[in-house]
Image (cartoon, rainbow over all chains, first blue to last red; front, top):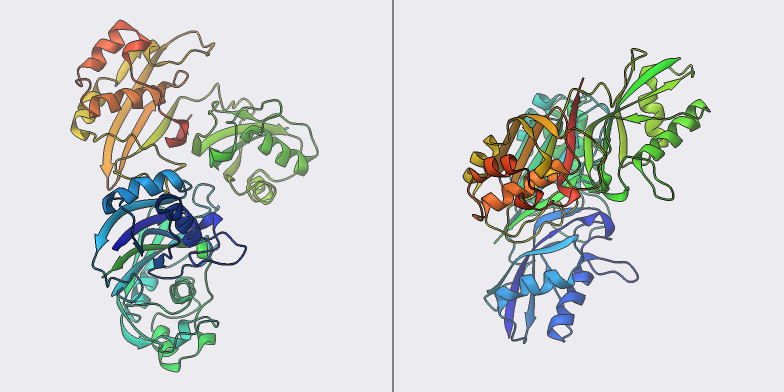
Length: 244
Length: 244
């Protein structure tokens, strides 16, 4: 049996997230259907994470086991001919039998795009969020520093997750302004439910002057979800890379 | 009567181009319907150019005359609440009575995005073209120089246009590679039907080694459409700016 690792780019706009759901179209299901049509097996694809409805990915990782004689590297093109054009396999390769896309993930980088213009954007409407505030990027950069490190991020988690530990390590959190976009990139060993989107909402409240950058320290220490910012919309979020 | 100039961003994916057509949804119609719902007048919007189905714009310009008492700058927000989210008014302003978005245009900048990767892109599928060749960007940059200047561009025009003169001036033509995208930006005083898309197709044939950069000079001199390259798909094209 071969263990195949897939690197996947997708536009999440038209899907109910990664994870298979009853009666709702998801990316996992689309890929499982495409694989089955090639291998004639019933297989399960293991994803590196669940992404919510509307979230996008450039480097999502998944794996599946197959007895098919299709050469591992050939799955890329074979699957791309079966998949809708908003899901693309960037790479397919054989990996060790014990590789597991979720359990073996050592870290991930997410990006969030804020549109910093007066008018909204027609072209970026599905790939950014338009907060309608003038944002102080320097204050946001200053605030970003307080997130880096190993902390209990329970204040930055939405309800509805069954994960037990809430301590995570953020290796890097960058805020960069380029033309009309403020891009927030965050790399960590793992993320709680909605954690990236709540961090971005918290940075916006600093950027619009509602809170001082130093307030991040207090939110983390007090472990209170109510002190952190709002959960920004899914559409501005992109899973950039998964590290193993 | 006020003459109102609109600067418009749109995602052309779901429209049959700018120009009003019978039984087909166009951007001009969507904007005229939105204006009429505010002013209660029957008005005609004059666009700076016709863009084809699937072509996008960041700085399309249009104008219309109205007796409405809506302050000119307020049309932006008023129209944006009426328009679908793939058409956005970036700016609305009062202009001289004799301003005409098409006749007064002195020049335009278009951009074309080529995807220079092995796999296609899910996220850029509607905003780029994926030529499937390895492209020599330096050769394309060299070829680009031959287009600049005042020439008869009849070899770079599709049939179906009724415009008489075929001499145009290209002020600037840049080829830039950034990550996975080769961006071609062209500024000129005007463009023949499909001219930008045929120029890009001609540059691709240089980039893949089919023709030498110097061959552009010969195509221009021989005025023969058959010597120029193919017309690349509309979806990679963006009208960036119109100059007055």
